[in-house]
Image (cartoon, rainbow, N blue to C red; front, side):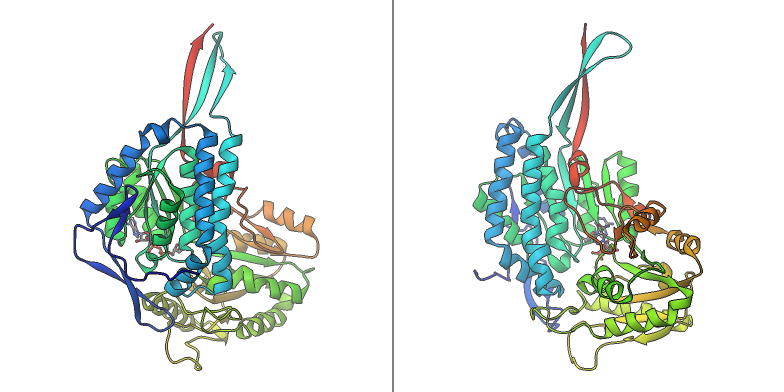
Length: 484
Ligand code: NAD
């Protein structure tokens, strides 16, 4: 393992290290110790201009624009190899920045970005750039071409910074686009490892550029005249703003936003397997995961049994230093976010919710942005805690009368991102899945699949990432008409 530099003083632009034009920095705060552990420069608008210009120039360079899919795939594979060499560094950097349990970080932030680059390298080789169709109604042939959409502004949140950036970078590069990435201010440090891997892999200059900043810099990037597509993952509130700007500009945009997904526990579910499965499906990354099943719908006649079992499971999850491999619940990513989660718990209590476990900060720790896993009972689906995304280790257990009632409750949400059903009959589970208004759904578990589309309906977003659909999101279609 190499040492991770924690004080960075430049940006990765045009294949090299670009001195910032301003003097402001963004602190990197450890959520475990609450101390500053590093810093990165904060971009000004002229740094963003430099990054977009580099991406715009690189888009037209023959060594990027004119290469074959096989040559582009080779670039992605070299990038994957270089990133694999740094996987442990990246995982540890993310855990230091946002408190993600290290076992999860090794997979999601270390290994998964490498897998995604390899997945899209394979896909671009097997996806024809052009196809010929017989024209209608006049006789002729039409060549349908898939062309790179251009310069992509990729904006990532702090919860899974490495893999969610790669949801965008890998298909964009595979399509022949160039990228300006803006990570979240809480998690800007780990993206320097991504940049170092790009250098080690010999990725052509300007194909990937990275600038740091908050929402102001994000807004500037989204509206930049030389950006051709925006790919955003983050809150629904920010997504609405970005959607407005892109609508005005008629600029393609993918929005991966918040959620309030349901777990439907059917009457034939095995109690122990369901509750064990919910630990991951509802509380992964200390609940800071967009597709978590945080509204747990259980049959009314088994309500008390499930409430007790889910509370016991939540209370039993090991909490502590996220670098400790046995820990399942780390600190929340920032003091601001911890305060927001605690205020939502207080509001739910005020609205009459009953806390069966948790509800505050753990007594055993004297520092760090920790919130105990917390379970609410005694509310119905109209309570704020059942309607708004908490994005922390907070679950609400709700009762239903029959399956139609459960499906109606699951669908009674502004969001539609994930969801799960728990049953001993997988066919019944698939039948339920078909009736839920959502972008993805798991039967007895939830699994992100690189080979299938991921995204939301309703307030959870527009567009899809992953799978061939995730590649198509970075391609424009052009029809060329040939007579005869
Ligand atoms: P956020 O919306 O506050 O910020 C996300 C990113 O957008 C950051 O980089 C931020 O600096 C930038 N940003 C904020 N406002 C902006 C604006 N108006 N214009 C341009 N950029 C802007 O979200 P967060 O708190 O970092 O992340 C948590 C949220 O992300 C949760 O709501 C969660 O559900 C969502 N999320 C969704 C998915 C998904 O795939 N659907 C995945 C992970 C997280």
